Each structure stands twice: as C-alpha cells, then as structure tokens.
Length: 280
Image (tube, rainbow, N blue to C red; front, side, top):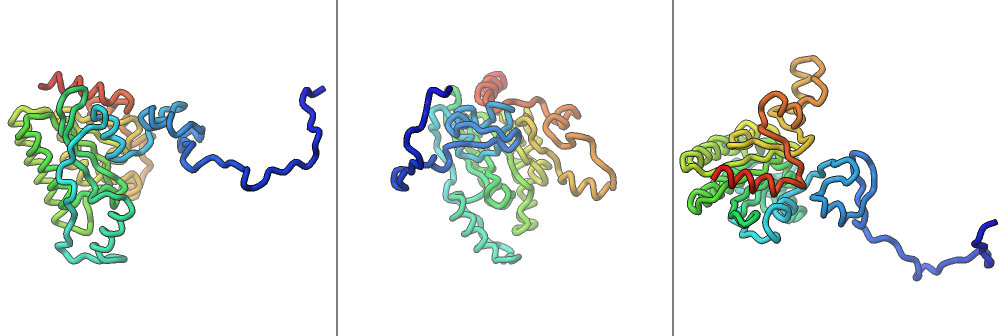
C-alpha cells in the first residue's frame, strides 16, 4: 500500500504560480548527451564531467581559465578590419563585419592581452571561431604581431591559442600575407630567447596551421581537436580513398610527430606555467 494517497482530485496549479527552470541552467554534452548543471560545467573548465568532452570556447572563457582572478589588460581592443578589396559575396564585406560585431560583441577573430598566470606575466593571443569562422585577416595578423612586440618589449612568454578555419577570403592576398608577417615576428621572439607555446584547439586548419600555429617552441593541443591544413572532406575527395580512423585528430597528429603533447583543459594553466618556468 502506498504511503501517499491523493485526497483531492483534479488539482490544478494556477498559471501565475507555475515555476519553470530558467534558460541556460542546464548543459547537455553534445558527445555523450548527458545533462549537467551549467555552473558545474563552467567550474570543470567547460569540459564534460561524464566523458571529458572539451566544449568549444572563445577568448572570454580562456582568459578566465588562464589569467589569475581573470585579471588582464587587453591590447588593441578596438582594432577593426577595413575593406581594401571592396569585396562583395552575398553581402558587402563591411556589412558582414558590422553584423558579426553586433552579433558576437567581438571586433575581430583574435583578442590579445597580458596578465598574471600563476604569478608569471604572460602575453596571450586567443582566436574566436565565432567571428567569421576564426578566419585570419589583416587585423588578426596585426594584433598577433603587436602582441609579439609587447612580449619582446616586456620580456614575457607568449601563448598563441588557435581556433580557425584558415585565411579570410574577403581579404585574399592581404590575408595570406599575415602568414609571413606573424612567422617573421615569431623569429624575432626566438632570437630574443623568449618562450613561445602554441595551443591548437578544435578546429585549427588552413593558413593558421601553415604558419604561427605550428611554430611554437612547444606545439600542444586539447584532446580531440581537429588539426590539419585542408579538411578531411577535401582530402578524401582529392585522393579518392577513405582516410584512417581519427585522421587529423590531435591524437593522430601527436602519434605522427607533429605535436609535443596533448593537455586536458583542466590542467592547462598549471602545465603552461610549469612550461614557461622551465623555458625561462
């Protein structure tokens, strides 16, 4: 016999008394489909507590994870792209930029800043995929170059966090020039004996992979990140054959000698600060 018996039938809760869970209270992992509290997900460095899936995050989240108490000074925060080629596809490039800026709150696909990481002052450039696919245009190259200049002037280690679909087609040759520009700046950093660590996240492809993303003193990646030059679909169609399982995953790239190690995001801050101490 049940210990609870409903005495009144047809109980109705008035609409004004109903309570619904607010939006954003729960997070569903896209990998294992399990549910967790959004706050728990954030405290776990935006990784799933069940399967350790690393959610794709942007500069805001990385800065909060890496900088002590989220204290940092942003560099060149207001720099925005011009339209040197008067480019138009489905809409003019300036209109696309304005729409993306209003939608994301970002000025371009990279943010640069410096601040303390476990009491070590570090200069960081972090890409945001939400801004036109994290594409590399003139502003991205210029901000990274200026961040490297800041590291040189202040003798700080430099961390590059890449997440990009490659070069920005709306800027054509101007975009491709950023590969040489950033690579030359990194050569100056190397000559000065300052540490440079490149963190590749999901995805890192195209001209970004072909330039600064693979030029670190240490090239590291997050678990499961897609890393490559051309995407798997393009390669499959080009060579006309199936690709190996896990092709271009961070684990595959590590196994074939293109990465130094893979680091869990929860351990990222401690691993990086230890690495910088070792390299200084």
